[in-house]
Length: 251
Image (tube, rainbow, N blue to C red; front, top):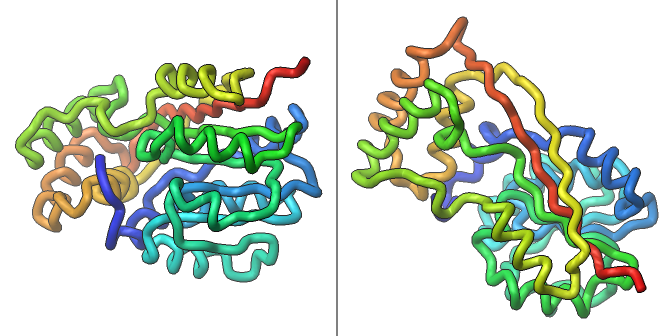
């Protein structure tokens, strides 16, 4: 829904982690290897960076918000493969000089100047490399369940406007943008799983996405809304992780 400035602690605590199956798939299709240099662009606090570092020898995590980088550095302390930089997508060419093998972008591509970025990546990503656009799941306020519909209605009331899909990942649009770039060979990978998730974690995702618009009183009201659907303080969520794996067409 907007900027995460000042919300890095909540983001780190509440955001869903990517499943290890994503890493396994990227290895299986040979875009992630032990010798890879990976960039996690728009890294947040490094959820994808941590996953990539389980295989890759070098991961550069980049985020435009210093607070995200600070919390990310704390969260990844001791993982020697990961280094951190403050920067945005339009800074990438000046931040990273050497060729890279893989660029991963999680829950962030919709915030970026996509066509300009892909043109820059064409000059940075090695000939056999890939760009992977990921989303960890459908946002909690946009799911097709009673608890999510009630949360969406309550959130709309708190924000004073109808909450829709605007400002969230759109894989149809993303695929079209990738298809018009040098990375036009696009394969979609989807992984679904049921997961029990705490009410606090669900509301934390909303708070971390709302650009500071949800104060403690509003968060408490949203908590009451979700709690009405909870069993033992948790909700069953269908988590749908998606990855668009984009490469240059092979001649």
